[in-house]
Length: 126
Image (cartoon, rainbow, N blue to C red; front, side, top):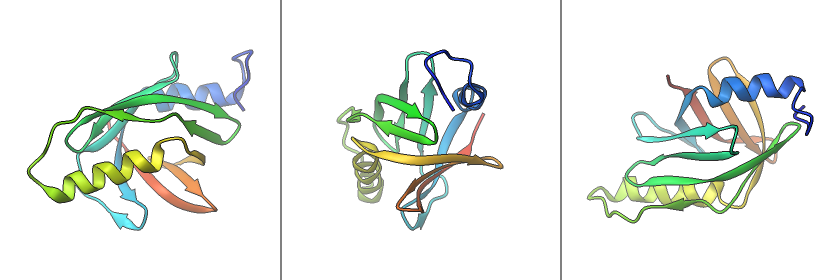
């Protein structure tokens, strides 16, 4: 959908995606509520930033048709008292880093798929 010319239908979708904060509501097989894990996409710079639950995270991404490829993600290195938060944050960053996923937007979710299975589901924030 997205082409170098910048006039493809996928551009409208990424304008929409880039205008929202995306909260992780499912990570692998675990449904999360209030995880504090979220990202925003800077579509002009093809970068993402957000929170892993404790630390700030960021990196770059590229899209082609219905695929999104993430660079190696980086994060700040604050220690947080909750071991579960740290575990989820590490799992999330490891999952995104250097990976390519098929994606779609359905209703108010942004879904990342690997081998036909949703591995990350983001709920739309504001």
